Image 1 (spheres, rainbow, N blue to C red):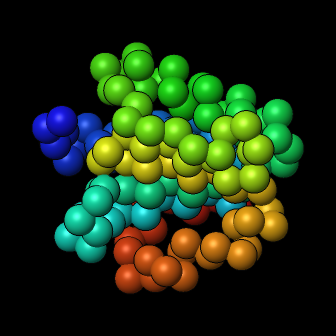
Image 2: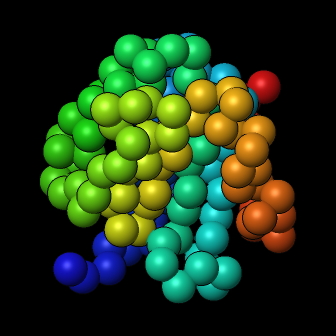
Length: 120
């Protein structure tokens, strides 16, 4: 799988954050990890309100990716919907319930990353 241009990855990360916001996720953050992570360029992190809502957000982000010609590399946690992870290589989406979000605290782990968008 080849790397997509920076501009496209950034645009998709922001579009995924917008989907999460439109579906009433909270505390949405887009972290720019370029040069900090060898695995990905962006993390999108959001908190969902229920397992059903989290799966809906994940499904809609996957549809948005298809519309941009992006293929999902992996998905984890979808059935339990406590922490749904969607891997698009250059952009990794994390949709947490509030308990898992507080426990894993990815923003602290990547504290030196630039926040592109924060919705509180």
